[in-house]
Length: 93
Length: 251
Image (tube, rainbow over all chains, first blue to last red; front, side, top):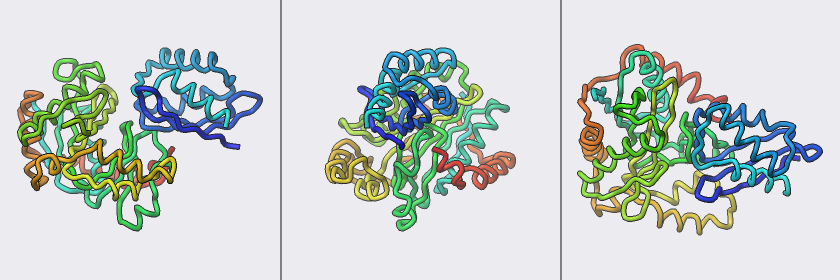
């Protein structure tokens, strides 16, 4: 089952999540919205990197923080805590 | 800074986005800067790179109303292009004319729009990340990408706003809130004609923007057209990318 959420990041942009889960882990995820990431093509790598991640706040925030850093991603209208919140809302649907 | 000035007139969404990319790719090799002004015919909805076309746009309604739809290479939100002037600036990011810092570069380029609006008699200001507002309402949205140290920023300057038509083409998260959303957007978005209370032609707005950018970025214009090589690439991108579902329905 695909779970969905729509979340407006405080002071940021709208994020939409499509999430498939298994055993409290991410099986597959699609992140869409009107945010900006530089470079743009990194979004596929980001989605792939989330597969098998545990669906907890700490794990996800740490994952995003690390991902932005090692891939030198600039984010506008989107951030680690906002994305995490959007994913956890989808999880509870 | 020397820039090529292109006034392309009205073109389809596919041609417009293909021209922007063809010029961007050539600039990666020839390091030339280009400022282009254009309109959209037929009218079109463009969505941001990260958006889902099917989630954002009512494709059947677009077909019914003969409105094209396209994915941009830049992020940001869905835009209805009908009564507006669009610009694109393509330039190497060298840190001299265009700051490396993304927000600072938006601010500097958007000053061209602000100066142009001022020539038309409209006071406006830049609101980070990517908006220009006049009398508290959005009049211009802008979006930027960077590829191999070359920047492409395109943005719209609204002449008129037709919120009802725009929302007949866009999907809303909750259908029952459609009327409220339309009312809210009407209070938050404005066009040049609405602010001035008179009809301003596309060409007059374009002329003001040409002067506005010249002053903001200290430009020296070389009036020209696309090169043969850019035209070939534009056709190729139009046919193999921008008019194709593989690109437009990518997310």
